[in-house]
Length: 380
Image (cartoon, rainbow, N blue to C red; front, side):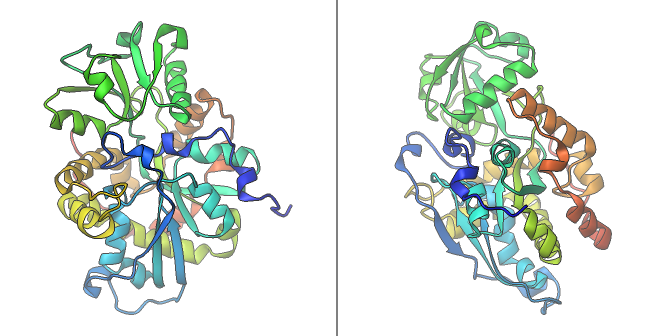
């Protein structure tokens, strides 16, 4: 059946993208600024030798990729894809990286045709799919989602699920509360077991004792707290009952059907870019702070030192033993099943075949087994 709905009809109005996908060098008070969707050409290229052969076997022309957030270290692999000519060598004359951070979602942009690929997460994509959007997830950068509850050693440290009962949890409005409620449900708790306090992204209320834990990103707020001289205590969702992935690549089903070779070439370049990125957090931070994300932090520059810490922290979400065995972006059958269960806990019932198509990645690795790299996995 032909797809006739508009992008806005496919995105539930209650879904708050800003409260879900916000990561990187965003400190206190920055989220109120309201960033417009911004495009930035990835025309800069580095040494051709870094990306392989000088001439691409195929000419796929120009494509656009919609990022899930502002241009920070979260997209270091894409920056390396440009700098090391991986996209160029894969056959793309230009890859334009579209900054996120505003009210427009990656799902909307891909459905509208303004970007061929979007970077998002299952919890953001599944509501649209259930409303009929012909979207599929074809791979994931993060094997683990970065959500956590951060408490402070100086306050009321929450180290285990059992510690949650009776505690005050600061949670941002919108989809973060949906995720938190799913986390509670997955661990046999109900909303009545805790007190949910609606808050913003600033950790100041936690520091001042207005609540006991702050819903955070492992790669962001704990770093900010540490820089303020506090001792953060982190209870991660992915390792405690809600193991859905994040920073997923989404495309239209029609793109899979009609541009399979293009998508495989794109994924190969992405694998090469992220292989370089995870090996060099300092360079990742440099590219984010001084080239691609300069001025992108809601009108301010990114802090390179902080971006380096975040790049190091996100490696813990990207690298696993399964990645060392199967390759970057892959999901095992068990991890797919865990994502479906996590989505159910958050109120979304769907089957794996309606949300995931990992066959392209399978083909990429079969055709390029040398892309599988044995990384040093960060200590937990």
